[in-house]
Image (cartoon, rainbow, N blue to C red; front, side, top):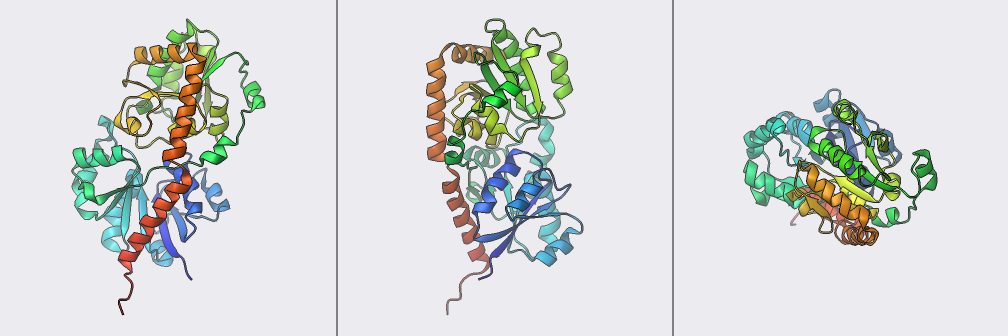
Length: 362
């Protein structure tokens, strides 16, 4: 029997949350044939998709490419792909296009994606969203009919991550002594991730606990600003800018505390990975995080003082760190196990495909 063909449209397959979500999920949705079309470039993860038998195509003449593929369904991810699907593919082809909402865009600089959604939502019959918080945002702030939005959260392979042990050689390579408390933030160096507030808080905590290290895994436009910020900090030699990494889980496994001082999110894959790695977690008190995890220390956004207090508490209490880490693990195993999420994906796709091709009543 020929498998139904699904095209996933995205700007690129660079190392990001949405891209890694697809890399984890699509190979498990093996009842369907998946093809990823990238709009800008293939991206660093493209070879990993192909190793898992997911075809990756760089956009050339998109309409012609789609005609050759003849997909049964097209799913778009993030603003540029959503715009292409809604303003280009939808009016020029017969294919059904479903946007997968990945973030709230709840920041002044993202006025254009919000305006686009308000102006074009009438053309969309059904949405996917990766969290109830994202669904609520689009319903309340954008005016999307909440009955049009189906939530399928990100999932993670909890069993696999639980088998990974802390790597002492990795710790040595980063010059991390055994008696140091390791704090980590895994996030692109973008203004909305809140790194500047974390660095200010770390400087204050360092004065009390000089045997702490901060690992920043990720790269981005804010790097030079952040390096300039810490140029006169006493703690600057204990802050490691690691750049883009493909070993986030290994880094989390050697860390004690995970901090995500983000201003807004969709559903953070880094937070999922930290939960599965049994890290004690400090993150911002925003709906996207509150709805995702119960067992974390929540602080208000843009608040270095609150981050300082939270770090001091977890650094000083080893058993509290362990307890929070274990409870976070239990929570992710119950709510976001990848195999369970895959079943929800499969049910949704079968349902949508059945609507396109209803069974013969005769």
